[in-house]
Amino acid sequence: MECQAVFWIPYVVTAFVAVHLVDVFMRNGFSGVLKALAKFIICLPGVDRLVRAFTKREVDGFMSNTFEKNTQKAADVVTIPQKGIAIDELRQELVALKAGDGTQVEDGRLFAYVYTTEGPRMELQKEAFSMFTNMTLSDANSEHAGIVNAYVEAFMHDNALNPMVFPSLRKFENEVVSMTANMLNGDSKVVGSITSGGTESILMAMKTHRDRARSLKPKITQPNVIAPASIHPAFEKAAHYFNMTMKHVPVNKQTLICDVAEYEKKIDSNTILLLASAPSYPQAILDPVEEISRVAERHNLPLHVDACFGGFMLPWVEKLGVKIPKWDFRLPGVTSISADLHKYGFATKGASAVCYRNSSIRKHQFFAFSGWSGGLFVSPTMAGTRPGGHLAGAWAALRAMGQDGFIDMARQLMDTANKMKDGINRIQGLQVLGKPLMSAFAFASNDKDVSIFGVADVMEKKGWKLEVQRNPDSVHCTILPGHIKSASQWLTDLKEAVDYIRAHGTDTKQGNSAIYGMLSVVPSDGIIDNFLVDLFDEIYKT
Image (tube, rainbow, N blue to C red):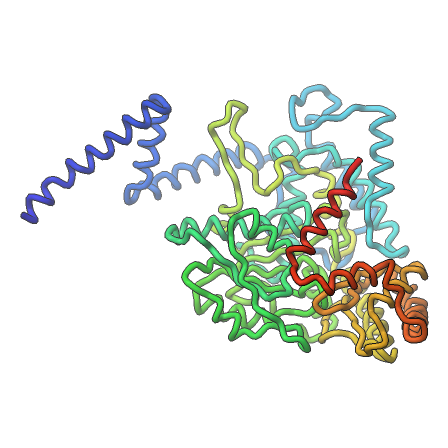
């Protein structure tokens, strides 16, 4: 009977395939049948290798014909220069790269990608863009800011959607990724993409690891991700968008660090990704990434490190001699890292990097669709159109600063942060939370007569814009170049604010005290979420 059953198997399979192909033909015609057959053939043992060999040969040929003779070809490995490049030299490079792109919009020979008008209206756009570009640079770096701004303007309408049309943008992106990867102690295999900001970098990392898990573990239909409770809300957004579940590990109330044993207990058969922060934004506390990396290795799971906040600060702080636990690609369990160029990379707003240990991981980030009547479509990140100006600005920012510039800025900002932390701890009623290792911190009240939100309200009236936080109630401070000269006055005003609140109490009918006082008595975060949605619905009405 067994032999007879085996004898009939090929006929059953053939009948099944035939019925399926007839169904495909009825729905999609002959072209649909061909596509279905192609998908079936690719799945056969050994065929996949042949297909990949064919596509690699075609890709190599295309790259050779398109880029090899192009002077804007990106180098294999690029590092942030030891010394910042002179402004005039950078300006000459950028002018040459812009001219080398060939077809310009004003020539009337480009039929897609750029929609602009020339003349006074264009000049007004450039002025407005420059006026509202958010640069976090000190007065001493005004020349640096000028070169970055000038070439953000020059490339602002160029479109990175098609790197063949604007080869300079490809060079900028590849070299910025290479400089970032090298700073993060990645080897020559590390690859990545430039995105519009930390949120998009996080979205891309989550999407990439979800799709990679689909490929490697197709039986997982309800993927989950493990993270400390202090992880950035952008991961919550990504989980919401991509149908994943976030599993949070509480952090210790004193150290603000999660217990790694509890972290590991959260892992189950549906876990596809581990997360950690370097550091977390609220209190600038570095997660135990070394220990989580070992957990990732034990369970054969990828680990993404969110260094959007600290990625361009921690490496330079470490070079200053501060003992920073390892958190980057030096750890074998770390699979990907996000780091914002427009924070401590001092690039213009709209630039972040997401880096992966190798290309086989990053390929799951890309989206391709060949069935469109408008031509072949492929997009590396969430956005289709990507403004070239931010790529140019990031490239110019890293090369203008140089490693010496980053180290010098880190020294000044750390000195200022330490001065402010020491000053806070000397004010009766306040304390810095945890042990932050970089140029940021949070502080809270340790006196029932001193409302931290009341202090923030008084400081607001004195002209300071403080970032108030919940869980625990506190104030967040990111130290920027402008604070180097304002730190002493800030500490004086802070002491006066605390004394005022202790003497007069808090006005609970206005300001942060009113909002956070209301939120503190609401029993459900869901109600608070609804409040925030309704608030923004009103804010963004004409």
